[in-house]
Every structure is written in structure tokens, then in C-alpha cells.
Amino acid sequence: MRLGGKVAIVTGAGSGIGQGIAKQLGCEGAKVIIDYIGSEAGAEETLKTIQNCAGEGGGEVVRGDVTNMNDVRCLVDEAWKRFGSADILVNNAGMEIRSDFWDTTEEEYDKVMAVNLRGPFFLAQAFVRRLRETKKPGRIINISSVHEDMAFPGFTTYCCSKGGMRMMMRNLAVELGPLGITINNVAPGAISTPINKKLLADKPKLDALLRNIPLGRLGTVEDVAAIVAFLASDDASYVTGATFLVDGGLMRNYHEQ
Ligand code: BGC
Image (cartoon, rainbow, N blue to C red; front, side, top):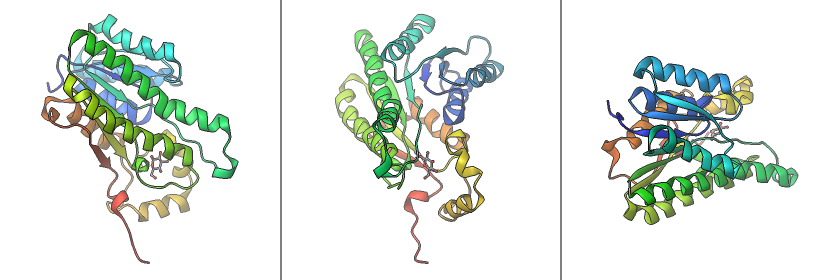
């Protein structure tokens, strides 16, 4: 199997895109640390799916809040304790809060930045420290968004965090390359997941969004997971410092009405 013998840590793997990624990596042979914060049942379901396609011991469910530095360290430590090391870190956990710029509170700003940028920064740091100690190569894959580059009015905190994630990735590609550690971003567009359940329930808004997507449909978690598995595999060993759009063409779309 493509990821046989590898160990992956996936944050936010109890639902949505993270759940899809953890299942895909696990079903391709990786042992997976399945991090969750709210959805224990979802995380257990992720583990069951992996065990059903890859056999016993395909992973471990760990509750860890990426905004808590102790949890961040424990998540990485757990991979070493349980499986002896780790090869792949997927910084997936993320959130968004809609609010006009002039109404945005410090709490909203801090929360979004802590989950979407501070967590991935320090998780990557804890992972890299471990790899350096043991002189091992590694893969870091961040789930950012088309909004690491494209404006999203009403979501400035989200765009700040994802734009920050883009520059974190570019910087670390240079700094970590000599250690044999690659880092890339996967930038989903509109994917059908709990993060946008409000939008999915609002037909006029959803139809307007679909008109902006050249491929004419929302993405699925499997669409995103497929490219993450590629980036985690040996096939991508010369790929670092790049963002991969998975957006059905959304980012490139422009029409004169
Ligand atoms: C956001 C979604 C949004 C999509 C396309 C994603 O990053 O989480 O809320 O619909 O980008 O704009």
C-alpha cells in the first residue's frame, strides 16, 4: 500500500475534510493519530473505517485542542509513544466566524487565529523538533483555503489566518528543506462539510455560489483527501512550497454578466 509503514497525525479528524483525510491515509496503509475536539463519535467512526479497510491497529483516537499548547505537544508525543514515530502531519482543524469587519470582536479574532494559524504553527514546530532529534524526513500538509489568496468579505479573520498559513508554508519550505521535510498547502474551495452548513441550507446563496464554480458542483471530502494522500506519499518527494487548489475552478472564474 502507498502509505504502508507511515504514521500520520491529522487534526480535526472527527468530521468534515479531516475525517475524509484520515480515512484516506489510513486506508492507504498509514497508522493515523485521529485528533478531534467536539466530535468523539465521528473520530471513532473514522477509526472504525480505517480498521475495516486496513485491519486492527490502524490508528488511535486522541482528544486534543490545537489552541492548547499542552494538547499540541501531547498529540505529537502520542504518535511517538503509540507508533514509535510519525512521518506526516496534516494541519486540518479550522473554523470560520462570519462578521462584518467593523463588528468583529477581539475574542472572534483571537479564536479564529488560534485555531487556524497558531495551532498549525506550534504543531509543525513540535513535529519538526521530534524529526530533527531523530534526523528523520517528514511531510507537513496544511489545509488552507482558496481564501489564503482570494477575498471573502465578512470573513476577514478567516482570510488573515489562511493568508498567514500560506506564508508560513512558503517560509518553512525554505527553512525545512535542508532537513528533508516538505510542506505544502491544499486549498479547498466550497466543499460540502459542517463548516458551511448554514450556506448549504440557504438555497439562493448556494445557487449563486454554484454559478461561480466552473465544474458546477460542490467538492467532496474525498476530492480533497485524494490530493493529500498524494502529497503524503513518496510520489510527491520533490514537491514543497506549493499550494494545490481543489476548488472546481472557483478561484479562476470571472464572468462579465
Ligand atoms: C470556506 C467556505 C466557503 C468556501 C468558498 C472555504 O474556505 O470555509 O465557507 O464557502 O471557502 O468560498
